[in-house]
Every structure is written in C-alpha cells, then in structure tokens.
Image (cartoon, rainbow, N blue to C red; front, side, top):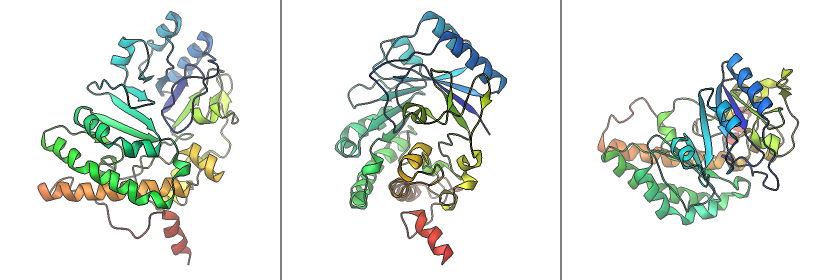
Length: 317
C-alpha cells in the first residue's frame, strides 16, 4: 500500500541512495507542479519527503513546502543553516563535515574501500550520533574476495556500539543494529510503499529511475500507471521472501540495474546483507553476555549460506 511521496525539488537534489545525482544542470520544480503534488499527496493520505539540492529554494517554494507536514532530506553542504538544523535527514557525500543533532539521521554515501579506511571516523560518529545510515555506492563491484574484510570491519565496531549502550546512548547504526530490532523485512519498497515525483511533474518508481531516464509511471493529471505492480511486493520476490536479512534495503533500482528484474536481487546485495546479518548476530550474542534477556524476542539463527539463492535452489532439488 502506498505510504510515501518523495518529491525531488530539482534534478541536482542530493542522492540518499546508490544512484548518482545529475549535476550538469538543475531543472527546478515549478510552483504549480509542487502545489498540485501537495494536493495529490493530501488526497492520497501520503507522507511527503522533500529532497533538496544545495540551492536555497524560492520563497514561494518554501511556503508550499511548509504548508504540509513533511520530512526534509538535505545535503550536509546546504547553505541554509536553519534548514540543516531542522532537517530530519542530512546526507553526506564525504567524511569531512558532521554536526549531528538530536533525533537527526546522518546518511553517509561512501565507496566500500573508503568505508574500510574510515573506521576511526565512524567510531567517533557512533559516539555522538543518534542514527547513522551507511550507503555503499559501489555495490556492483563487491565480490566474494571482500567478504572477510567487510565482516572484520563490522566486527571491529561492535565494542563501540556496546560501550555506547552501556552509557545509555542507544545509537542506531543500519549495518549493525537494525537487524536486532526487526522481526520482518524492512526494505526500501519503492514502487509499493513509495513513489517519486520528479521536477517534470511525472511519477517514477524512485529518484534513480528518473535520473537514469527510465520510463515514468504516470503523472499528476492522470495518476499512477505502474506496469505489473505486484513485482514490487515482497510476495513476488521469490529469493527475498526466503531471506531473513531483514535490514537489507532490497534496492529496486539495483535489482533492475544488475539483474534486469525489479524483484530479483544481485549476488552482491545478498552477500553484503548476510555479512551484516552475521555481524548483527555476533553483536546480539555479545549483548546477551552482559544481559541474557536483551531483546529476548529476537533470534538470528545460524545459516549455511551467504546468498539466499542457494537456499531457494536447494529447496528445488
């Protein structure tokens, strides 16, 4: 069921996921389009998320944005300090500038190799941030030779997370703590729970589909027209529905890009999610050495695979 409308305020609005933002020009959303979009969202009872670029919007656009309850997704380099301080989500394209504020989600887009080099920086961030989401931007380059490096990196962060919890700071870190809090899949669900409105007034599955010139799925005048909408649901993802790496974002765009099917994840996505699952299991076990009843309703069982495709294949044999 549709819950969220993501509105790109311009073509160079910050990316908060794996896709790259177009930066050669900035096609801004028109006030008439934005007004119509807000009315449409209200009629459909959708939560609205505005994705900002580095540019300060006009007074007319700002007034329209503030006419509805919403979430602001803002780049860390935005020049409007007031907007940055109040934004629910701040996105970083590098590791330079961090001003974490209470209740704010810090999203860090980074390559895998850079992430491994930033252990000390990440440890510092875990100590004063409420929530950190790491987005690895080169998932397609991940291979089985990097499995040990990724697991060792995540395991090295476990003592910091435990120390923070001991000190009363229940930091949330998507690569480690999310799996502890979930009893079912908590995926991106683009095309099912969320859709995106681009500055051109057209709907798209998510920002990546628009920025990579994929076909639109409707417009504000005629509504949505999603072909084969069932394919965006977990029930129609035969590999994912067999999986309990609940923290995996199951990125529809990466599915489409790497496997040509929106409901089929790549090997790279699956093994990375399962490495995170293993690290989360280790974290849970360490917590329970301190408090045996910690998150008693959560279980992360041992499995013999990194890619749930193997589980699906074995069931067929």
